[in-house]
Amino acid sequence: MELSIKPIGTIHSCYREKFGIPRQPGLVKSARGSIELLPPCDREEMFKELERFSHIWVQFLFHEAVPDGWRPTVRPPWLGGQKRVGLFASRTPHRPNFLGLSVVRYHGLRREKGSLYLDISEQDLLHGTPVFDLKPYVPYSDAVPDASSGFAHFSTRKVAVAFSREAEEKCRSYQEQTDRNLLALVTEILTQDPRPASQRASTREYGMLLWDVNIRWKANGEDFMVFAVEQQRE
Ligand code: SAH
Image 1 (spheres, helix red, strand yellow):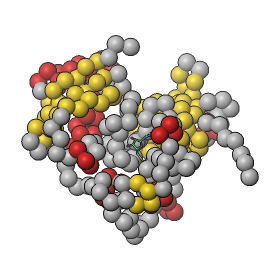
Image 2 (tube, rainbow, N blue to C red; image 1 turned 30 degrees about the vertical axis):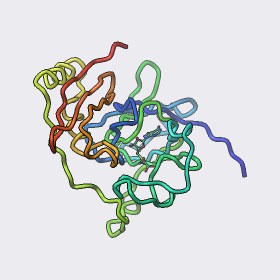
Image 3 (cartoon, protein in one colour; image 1 turned 60 degrees about the vertical axis):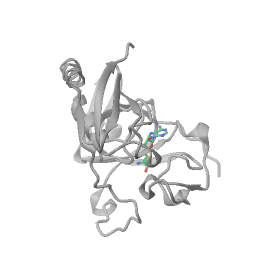
């Protein structure tokens, strides 16, 4: 059967490029975003009683993975980037239909300038991601406490993150202007070491875009140092 489906919404996210996005939802609590609903799904009645749920499932398209295609096997980061597993034994964005699935925290509906938004947090989603479906997360069935997960467990390794005085001040003044807690967000992201497994020993400089701010950092021994926080001109 062939069926053509259209997005019901679009993700607005603090993550403006792929690098730096956590590997799963729930890992970075300070990540904030929303889902802008598109017609005909921009009607409040379609979300009646959803406020009873703390979390929702988001089904989406890994739209930025499409140009690179997919391969039958991949090297997941949880195996240190060394060993290959089948793509269906992984959560890689590079899949035959490029479909992703994430549980995110739900904060409620908001109508702004005529558009309807669902406010979310803890997402692992890129800004602009097309959304295909939403449904409540129901822990009595969806949470499987005795499930085993191969080697894909949460890394307990935590990197210490330091900021130069100037970088820290920029984060604070950005928060005053925008109410976005940049210091907490950057710290949570870097603590988990977003570098690819092959670059674990790298001391080069990295940049990542969060909202309209470029964050520049590098490894300093075992720790990371954020040395510049540069607001982009829009
Ligand atoms: N929880 C989802 C996603 C896991 S992969 C699932 O299991 O299906 C997570 C990675 O997807 C992130 O690190 C980010 O780099 C990437 N990603 C997020 N949104 C994307 C998009 N729209 N296009 C391509 N890659 C994306």
